[in-house]
Amino acid sequence: MHYDVIVVGGSYSGMAAALQLVRGRRSVLVIDAGERRNRFASHSHGFLGQDGEPPGDIAATARRQLEAYPTLTWLEGRVEAVAGQVDEFTVTTAGGDSHLGRRLLLATGVTDQLPDVDGLPERWGRAVFHCPYCHGYELGQGRIGIVGANPMSIHQAELLTDWGDVTLLVNGALELSQEIRSTLERRSVVIEEAPIDKIEGHADVRMVDGRQLRFAGLFTATRTSPSSPLVEAMGCALEETPMGIQVRTDAESKTSVTGVFACGDVARAPHSVSLAVGNGAMTGAQIHRSLLWPETVAPVQAEGRAR
Ligand code: FAD
Ligand code: MG
Image (cartoon, rainbow, N blue to C red):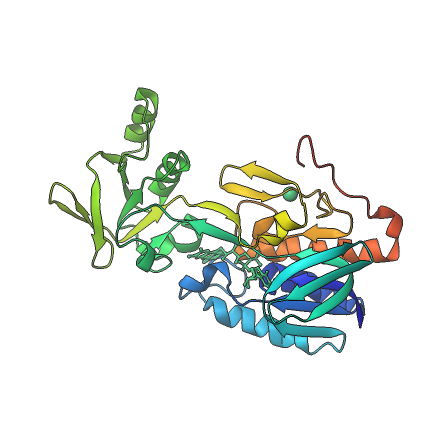
């Protein structure tokens, strides 16, 4: 089978793209390793019509609806290698099977690099979060701790004052100028300089000086980078954002490699299910367009300003 499109990554953005393509009666192979970024969270918020639903349920409903289309093929597994060029891409899975496709969509998501704090990783998505719009409301305007990680932590501390009383736990990770201190103080952010020993209980922060600071929840600014080494193996140009590294794409979701598209968290920021789905739907239509009018498939420039 020579598929019109092979989608690597069958989560929100990849499925949203696939849906447009199968509705355009194109043949689509989705290959998914099943490691959605939000798999650590019990509930997903802020996605219209699905607010508060378990993230796995949202994905499962989408997959069931997608699999009803006869031109959709779904494979559970991990793509390990990609070769070839536009109209003749070959992807090879961990199981050793190869598949041929005319276009390739990378919807492989990003991985969060968490700050190195004892007790933080096991609370990720349950009591420690990164996105105020996703998990801020549920903290009921209680006390919020920001675990310092990088300059984005300062922005996070300012932003979260609309969700509760904020303490910025510097933890040796931030340089705070007098100007920044004044800005934070104007917003009533408490600045805590003592290093963190560990996180215990629900979201209780034990400082090295022995004090325990109790919070309704904690936030931290993670650095994100593409989950899959495929984007680099393909030679797709990357770019920096305030959140981390992503694949460079243009407004049509084309990467710097002809015939390779990217969407969702791996290609744009900020990150949410709504934005991944919206970007995925647009990308599906753009890939369809590139199949109908192959002359439009020229890649985005690898150098220069991103759009
Ligand atoms: P992902 O959902 O990350 O999916 C990428 C998929 O690609 C995965 O299934 C992965 O296994 C697969 N994949 C990767 N490499 C390969 C490969 N080589 N072969 C095959 N498959 C591969 N957003 C909200 O809107 N509301 C929330 O409440 C919310 N809560 C969150 C909580 C936490 C803890 C985190 C970390 C994020 C949260 N988000 C939330 C953000 C949300 O998870 C992302 O924006 C969204 O998942 C992005 O969708 P995506 O399709 O781009 O990527
Ligand atoms: Mg882009």
